[in-house]
Image (tube, rainbow, N blue to C red; front, side):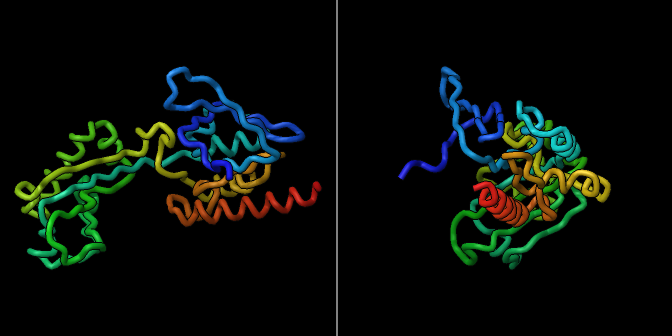
Length: 238
């Protein structure tokens, strides 16, 4: 059975004609950067609009307008590992969230491995909007330091128990350049149906093509819907 997923494939061009779709891509890990090509009868494209609008893709003018009409929210997360699960041992916190009015926005507690000895990991910061732009400008280590500095006001055990950390800001991820598509009543009324339509032989899918943006559920439902509609259209052309 041939491999169904081509990893490290950076798409550079999508071109459709009356008989099919040709996709150009490069291996992002290849030193020579040679362009590869694949062709199919149809294309279900789930590339985020932040990336897709910068690519060479020959879709209709209304579709291009719809793609450009959806800005993306930024977001950040910081994960913190501690030497022990002090929130359980000291404070009897088992899962759930602490919401704050600080830049870290919230702290989330793991709902797995409860009552276990040893290290544990907290979601030490998670938010979006204006505050996230401040986090975007920081290095990964600086984001961790900020999360620790604010988090200790909730949990004074932070400085003593901290072990390691990691962080991510979605606007700095090169294959997404944002966290999720932002819709309002006006843009949905003007562009949503067009964005979700089958443009000749290309149909888009993803959380940005759903009424549940920012969630995996929206992305999955969008993919299922796109596949069903595309299957129906393909059968009509047989």
